Length: 473
Ligand code: ADP
Image 1 (cartoon, rainbow, N blue to C red):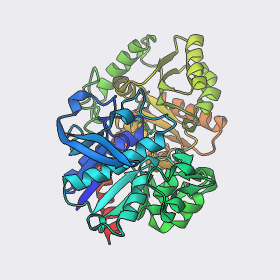
Image 2: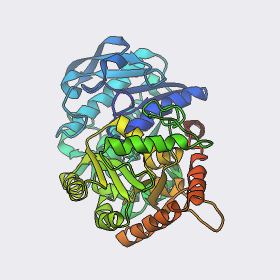
Image 3: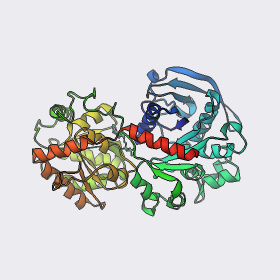
Image 4: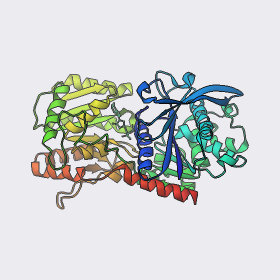
């Protein structure tokens, strides 16, 4: 089976969040289970030159808006599987990956160029696996091409929803110039008087998937559907939830090169050294018995920062350290800065993005808080589990699917989980976690329960293969 994965971001070429992790790791995992997979992603200004191994296509002349855009395609296997990076400097060599008024145009181009490239590099894929709103354009284009283009006739599309909150909306009057003037295309994009690339993907793709089972149900409700729940309900018989995997080659405390000491489920002693190094890194006192509660995230409303703001005072009063790594909305960045200024001996803050620091925090912290309002899958709670860092999460989306609440009576569970999006519920769970932490044996049991969980990509890849086969049938 030939599969082409198309994504706006993919590790290690580019990343702003979980989508990048998934799109980088899935093709490699597919290859490992015998699928002939290829990844297509843009070449950004941020993509490191060392990852551009070769020029694969020098003259990828893309017909675009009545002219020809002279793009190129680089080749790489830096993510562990064959990858083509589409190079269109005027569209992708910019200060940031997203955030421009013409993002819809940038990704419409990328989608079209990816399909042009596929024709150049070989036989048609059986499956084109599209990801999030940035790839809604290709879903429509393939559905249209299939009617008359022999190359595309047998290609089927899978569209994965990584986050329903981002829908790629733009003015419907732009559709025509992007090549989507047909009635079919206009209907697919049309949403509340606008055009929505997410809606087009949901409507025009053969099969839909999302990144956890629970999120698959949630997006069929008004609370999580962001206006498109009627469509996911309508297509529920074609919608499947597959929890993301973790790349254990990158996130493995036993081999992680970013750590001052390695550790494993059988010998956790190195974790103490990581905690020491992390406290030092944040210029916090070397009080190794005191619990550290950490958070690593994009600072947006989705991530439950409001709840963290409400409980921070009590958490500090209870004696814990708090460590935060993240950047995003100013009010949240200001909050962390103020908290640090208020209690510099108890609060460590790094505003920005740092992969090495994320590894050190995952290893050095005792607890990881993730009280998200919604969370399609979430990766950090799974990294935390593997690093013996006990997650405290809200029961939503992938957090609910991957974290089991600790039950002292049976000795089962690997974290602490609350239901309602309320600060008092969150705080209760933090207190419970602190109580459990005080008993070394109990804590070790919770840590080990988490470290034993297998969230490998191999499991997830096999489920995707089943999904692809179902899509073709
Ligand atoms: P989302 O995709 O909504 O941002 P996920 O938990 O699925 O959330 O994935 C987030 C990914 O981005 C994780 O790999 C996490 O470690 C990483 N990440 C987020 N913010 C930062 C940061 N400031 N520094 C380093 N890594 C970060």
